[in-house]
Image (cartoon, rainbow over all chains, first blue to last red; front, side, top):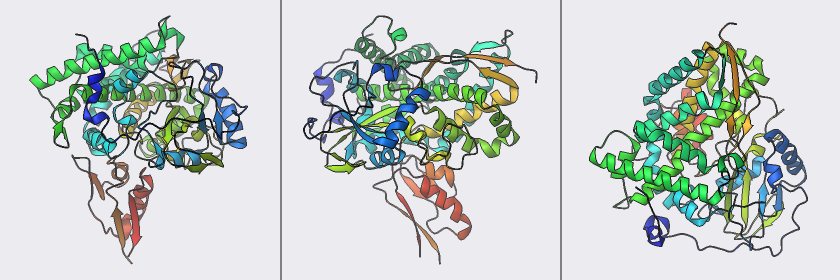
Length: 447
Length: 66
C-alpha cells in the first residue's frame, strides 16, 4: 500500500481557510549579516558545548542578530534574505508568547524544506489560532495530568522491563540509545496511539529518519529531501493502515478518538489524521529519547547529583526533571514569521521577516540561570527553561507524558544500577534535534 | 480579603500545567476546556494557586484579591 499525494490533497479546508497571505521576506533595510555566523554546516556539526560558546557571544553582543540563510539547506531558496536569530531567554519568551505578531502558519522549521514535506508532517505545529487550538484540543485531552496518571502504571512497568533487560546483560555494557533511550518513548507512544506490534518498528524507524535530514550516516548517500518525503509518506501509510484497523475495531486509543472527532461539524480526513500522526510520532519518540541519553551522560559528569536525588527521589524528581530538560534541550530551533512591524532586541522587525529561536541558548542564558553549565537538580528556577518552548500556544503538548516517562525510567536506573557511566555520545547531524545516535553505557550492579 | 481566579478562555490551550500544580483547583475536561473547580479558593491554597497561575504558558489565568 503506497500513499501518493497530489495538489487536491491540500485543498482540505483544515489546511487553508484563514491562512495569512504569504508575505515575502525582504532583505531591504537589513543590516549586514552578523559576523558571528550560526548558519554554517560546520557550526551545526559541533557539540552543543561548542555551540554554546558562540551563543554566549551572541547573547552578550547581539541577542537578536541578522543572519544569512542556513548552509546546505535541504531546499535552498535563492530569494531568501536570511533570518533574525533570537538567542536570549527573554526574547525567546517574548516571541513565543506573542502569537499575534510572530506566527507559525508560514512554517516553523529553521531549515528550508520541501513544501510537500511540510504538508505531510506539521499539522497544528505550523498553524495559528483559531485553527491551531481547534485541532490541538482534539488530542490535548489525552495528554493532561489526569490522563497521563492513568497510564503511569503502564509507564512504570515498561521502565522496569527495559531495565530488567539491561541488568541481564552479562558484559556490563550496552548501547544506551538502542536498549533504553529509544525503547521507552516508542513503546508508550505506540500504546497511546493504539499501534499494533507489527507496525511499531517501522513507526520508530521512520520517525527517526524524518529528523535526520542533515546526518550523513542516516542519509547513506540518499538525498535529504528524498529521505524525508519517503519517511513522511511511510508514516502516512502506517496511519492509513491504522485508520482501517481502528475503524473496523475501535478501541481506547488516540487514533480511534481522531477518527471519531469532529471539528466544526466535520470529521478529519485521512490526510489530516496522517499529518497529526507524523507530527506526534516525531514529537513523541525523539525528544524524550534524547533527553534521557543526555541525562545519563550528565550524571556521569556530575555523579554527586545522583546521590542527592536518590536521598529523596519522590520529593526531588519533579524539579530534577526540569533540570534534565534544561540541560538536554533536545529541540534546538523553531521559526516564526513576523506579520506586524515590531522591535526586538533593538532591531526593527518587519512583516515577512523570519525569526528563529535557539532554545539551547535560552536554557544556558546566564541572566536567568546562575552558573548555567552546572547540572544542578536543586536549581530553584530550573522550570523556567526553554526546552518545552518559551510559552505561548505552541508550548510542548507532551510535557506531562515526557515527565512521567523520565520519572519512571530514572527511578529504575538509579535504584537498580548502583554504578554506571555513559561514554562519548555519537551525535545526530542536524540543526533541529539535538540527538544521540549511539552512546556506550557501562555499569556494575555492585556498589 | 478573598482570592478569585479569573480564566480567559480565549487564551487557554487546555494543556493542564495548572492542573499538575493544583489538581484541587483545576481540571482539563475531555473536550480540552479548563474547569476551574474552585474560583474563590481559601488562603491555604494560595501557594499552589500562584504556582499554577505562574505555570500557564499562555497567561490565561489571573489571581485577583477581592
